[in-house]
Image (cartoon, rainbow, N blue to C red; front, side, top):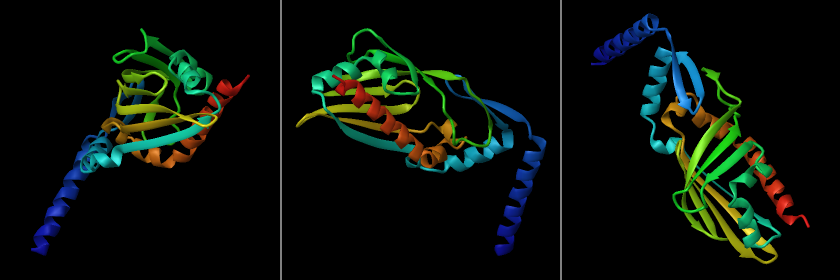
Length: 215
């Protein structure tokens, strides 16, 4: 029985090597907006096979950030509810436009600078900026804004709570790294660059505090 198992796995290994040798050709993947990646077909098939066995939870990303601002909820809401203000405190955003009034069903288009440090392996064709879209799910003035991405499976919830001396602003993100990006190591990138993202989040929080707390 052990002999048959050994023969079976040897045959599989031989077939894999033959497939790789005969199909070592480049393929281009359209990932997200204008971002493309070039890799070899056998590598794509192999990594796709491996990731196909991984549970969705391995691609799940959830984060929460909260801080306090010395300004009333109404003032904080008036700034964050207007997407044109986002570039003032989020460094990677160049422009954000809201189609119509802020309400359930309205859509926001965001142009942001691309930063894919952490992704390794395939050759990437990355533009300087990309445009992403989001749809407003619900709005409670001075209390909460919920939106969902139009590009990936992700939801962002922003809550405002009145506290002594100002407002506690909490942002919660819940999303799944798309399968096509997971093929290129985006799941690993999420783990490896968590520290850098935390620094960027703190920087954005500080800018928003300065913007709202200035006389």
